[in-house]
Image (cartoon, rainbow, N blue to C red; front, side):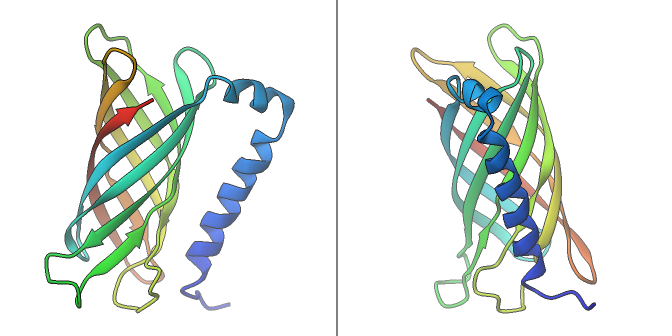
Length: 173
């Protein structure tokens, strides 16, 4: 069966649906009591589209003291060519986050899967599932936490592969 442009979106929706079903279990609901929500600013260097800017949200829940599970999504606009030539990307991700020991700034590693989706379906942008691996740091504030991270991703398209390098900064509530 040939690869369709809608297939990456279906894969990502299926993965996010499976995660939502897992959250419905009693053990998972107990973990959600400690869930944290974050909002941030996202910049993205893309081999396909250049430099983009956008926003990102993340919901994470601890599995234990060192490991967390996160679902997040971002909207990035490649707008430096003007509104008429802008490309918009939605990039949902599911990640495992390992927090390393730290004093003032706690480092963490994250890895997971996601998607790189052009909602316009114009055919000009590489879309597909992604694999990401990254590193970040959190710095405690008074009642919230500042985070910044770099999590390069590999986009697996129908007939080629490309990379993106995001830099994110934001606040976890």
